[in-house]
Length: 179
Image (tube, rainbow, N blue to C red; front, side, top):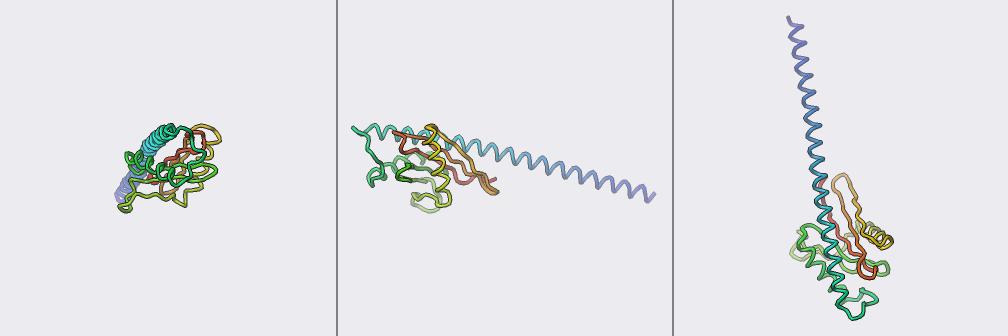
């Protein structure tokens, strides 16, 4: 009788272990689906922000009797920053800017930045090279480019759209999507 009780308890423990492993697998699958959906939502948000920013830039550029040869002047940089702040204020945790091949970053804004009362205007150094590469790819192809950069803790989504005469693509980015 003791051996049959021992066999029954061992069988019960094995069943519990199998159920726990199956539950862990299901929970991880559900978690991954949630992260995938979140990334899809954020990518749509970033694409919308970049598209709206491009539209506003084109309207800004059309306001000139003759298109400026460069937007790298202090006055143009202030105006481009204002465009970014107005557009990106409607997109929570999306930041973006304007970049050109000859002049680099022209303007940058992160109006929903939670790190203080003043909106963030500096380009993140850790991602500047990636942003420039995606912007240059958009210039080279003449069409919008979207790239994601997953890491262990977050996914970075970058979008660049050529605007105007093709000199200043706009980009929008989302910094943190927890994985």
